[in-house]
Length: 163
Image (cartoon, rainbow, N blue to C red; front, side, top):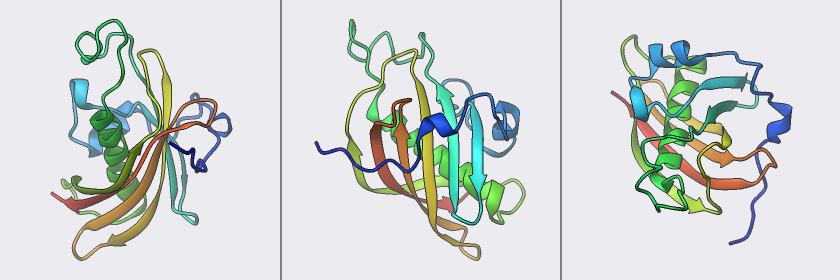
């Protein structure tokens, strides 16, 4: 599959320059334990509508033992879920969403998997808000999962609704 242009160069977003940590993410996204797929937010640019988040994929993540024993590969649906969680956080950081609500994953368009991610890998989740309708609490977000060398491993457009 052909490579696509990355939205960011991960080297421009050091993992130690956190603007929202795990606690801030947990205050707005209800995901816990193995389904919290973001460790931090590294960048938000409201003018360009760009958000960059980070996750270190643990060596002992819940899927490692059973998703291709001997050659564990992060499930694609979890990459898409990480994109959806980043989109939800972007909504909280840059747009109005009633207190106590979050953006639930309601659809995906043009999802592509262009490589694989193994345990112990750092991933950057980068994306842009394409559309947000405050009245309906509806959003559309174009995202990518990248590794340190700027390779796009997964990309797609997420839609979500306020829950």
